[in-house]
Image 1 (cartoon, helix red, strand yellow):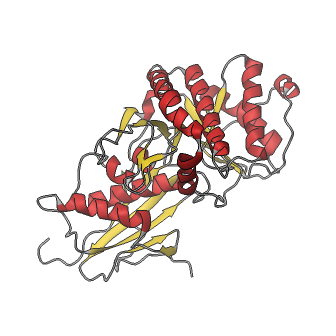
Image 2 (cartoon, one colour; image 1 turned 90 degrees about the horizontal axis):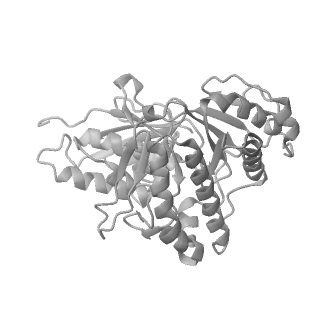
Image 3 (cartoon, one colour; image 1 turned 180 degrees about the vertical axis):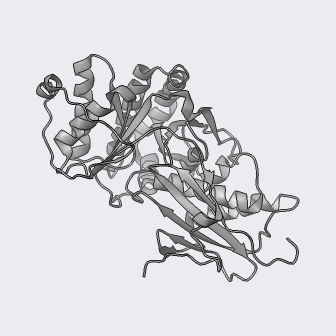
Length: 391
């Protein structure tokens, strides 16, 4: 690029991932190294994704970032750490595509609520790292770089079913994510994201996690005794497409995670009344059928992620609408679904209706990892400034 003073604009999307074996607790805060392995399912980018454009220019005076239309600080915190890690990796290349001394402009947006317990940071940092690596010409594994922004982001750089290995090295070089199986491995798997709240949560995941590490005895027990056998079991269930075992482990790990949140001092309360009602509904449906028809997991927020097989989507969706909708015509989003009713099941359920308890439900499925888009999709103009900024 000798003689040039500007770089091309790179635009990517990256998906959300939902952990079925939770990441909760760091053994190293600066390197973001976890106390246990975690396993997740990457969701389709068609319904939920982060989108990021990056460019560099010799004439930019400083690094700048705009998130969802608003400029945010770019010189401190996780963003700065992540950017520094990518630049360091680019500096080790014989000939980076772009000089690492040039400042960058970054514009990112999510098509779903930020900081509401919907894994927005995972998608955001996975997208950022993917775009920056493309800008600098970095190839190979990028999960360790994404981890420096947000731990769970390392799982969103891959599609399908993913395992984040906690690793043992002090420098974190072996704390990476690997794909267990692509999304196509389990074509019948479907996901219902039940949004009880799309506002920012009171206790951030970072703060809650730090407090849990300091004060929860249950966290230490889980990391040493619960997670290792559960991880082996659910990996085998994914390989064999064994939904009964997958569902059982997913529910148990979610419940234990939130027990740790309650065991934390002061407690981190992420679930609400609707959350508990949704989980009760799932258990009652499973009891009615005498097998696991669906399973739930909750990240650090009140929103349930329900995994289920395709043949049960219409039935479970209709029950969610019956008990938790306020009658809105936009209650269901994402993939089209056909509602199915079963009066005998409805009569057998003991669930208190909470009208408006769920704002909406997103119907989606497992999907692939980040995708590079064309120039016409860029969020930055030719001058390196955002095309859309909130005043």
